[in-house]
Image (cartoon, rainbow, N blue to C red; front, top):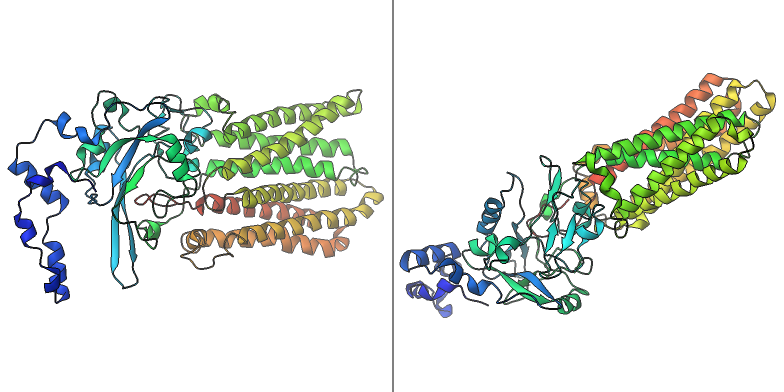
Length: 572
């Protein structure tokens, strides 16, 4: 364990207050003995009062590496946990030097706590900032390439002028490092005070720490990779294999495994991200309408197929345009949304955007073809190509949406959970919308053969709706079933506290729109064949209730998302 520069100047009187261990006869004596030594801040104050402080550049020189990183090396933070007193001088210095906003922090101080087998409580302060990872999740996920890793120093920089404020990096970073600024409309983060490093000056946090608990080291990247293969930075953090962080936390004695982050009890609901909710629900509604219309074409041949296809095409296109328009509202700088395609090589968000743009153009072409009646002309091949393009790119878009969230360390956003939910939403909303529109057209036609087909068509679609809804609710509840204890399952803890009402409404509307009403229609459709108004009301209610239920489910999807984070950062 390193010793602060001013340690040698401490008077020997402090040690005289330490009683011999053999004389500690009572608990009171033990506590008095522990408190006889001065705190880190008191030692720092005594040093500055009793000695001539050397020049700043020399005083902090041993906290900086001599020279610059070589081949296969980079700068990295090192934190000595035995020296960190939790005073937050580093937080204040970082905030002031970088001109951060009132509630914005690039470095945080938290603590680990726990109780050992003897019943003694243990607490450990931890200071943490950006880890300047070897494989940064923020950089890989960014759709506009607003991050770059310096090839010489290894420092991960954020390019403020390139950022569009999509906030996706706040999802892909497992350490909650990038911070979104609503006033600026962009994300910002720690850059290790690179402008100070270039002139041999210590970063603000290093220079401000009174106990010299923070320093800058040069690390070997191969050593970092080997160390991070199957490890975590510190208790409660995400697995280091995700992004290969370079920060080192030192301690003379290893931290006990039972210590947990002090921010665990502060877990709260994440932001709802309403524009993203609208975007996901309406894109899946749009794709589902195309898919279900294509699936039921053979059963609907007796209807005026062109009129039905036109209606589906127009409503589906309208839904897609609503979704794309809503997605721009999530951006801090929507005027620069066109940049979001440049990260195609590494970012699933860029891929999702490009795929849905192609889907939207295919939907427009398909709608124009059916509106102009070219489906009855010699352009059958063009119509067929447009139809299949809409279907293929639509399903690919739903897949890419699931991958956007799979590529984050958020609890239960993995593809095993997210993929089925997104595709089942596509089926549910597609089937309920096709049911309502088909019944409308079938009932306005005075054709007895169509009325005879109505029962078969309704029962088939209702069966699909019921099965898809029950399957989706089973997937949703699989999130909380494995660990029913609140302390073991952060998602269940959040749902049972902050989000209980949303979860109840999701269950009510989901069961009504996806199970009870379709089941009622399945068994009673023969009674309503001649009652067009009642049948239409039932089909519309099934669609509306299912749509509302999916909105509540998607709200839970975002707000109940939980991730591991560093001590001191509020876990969402």
